[in-house]
Image (cartoon, rainbow, N blue to C red; front, side):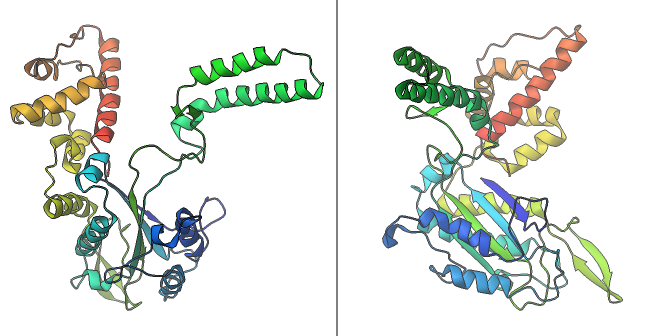
Length: 359
């Protein structure tokens, strides 16, 4: 499960939306273009399966009392279940709506306030989307860029030949194009991956727009509060404020698992990622303590990503326990050891992304 929370950004230096939620709502409606009504996805909230885009805009834009011009008026939460999680629920949008409504209960419960915050205090609207498109900054698009550029030039040369503006053998030019197409690293159904192309596989995800102000337009509920349990002085009175992201992220997994009977593996857990970031040595100690089958699955997933042993041989015995042979790294060669350890960290990052714990 991957969850991303971002504030609405307002300013000249951001590729973003204006002070109204209109642009963002219109962006989320693009997937409905060209689809018959029965195949379109609709906004929903805690109690309604279908909310019009116009209602979303008026309700979010109208719930901004006492917010300053540069304050975010809403937050975007993008919930992206892994392929494995989506397959477990048969990629069912109705189940994802059910999950979203339970998830927002956990979102509300993660706020630290003078009073209990519940889902009934939130003004939010969500939408389940089935597709994702490649964007220009993504690695696959950028790695294909030199090939696309050369192919475009060659196709332009063929057009010039046909117009009599260039003397070249068009068959030779086409052979060069075919060679570049074969050499390009990223393709879908024979076409080069490029910006705007639909991504392959299950890409279902949930967009949630949640107002910064509570449903009464009185209290500010910001998930970007820096401290989990912070108290500030406002108008001479102590006021509690804060949001516990760790609590929310952990709850998001537990909700999914409980709702749908999903058995979450060690490498899929948000807590696993937290431990690795803070203490890689402790992470491998936890791997060593896993039941045999799960330990083997975890280590083999690392081995597939070419994760080496680190300078102290911390992982070597664990891999050997799982029946995987890895070459040891000479401990007397400090530079080589450091390089190998950095490679280990890079491989671990890939492994965790593959395990879908990147919240």
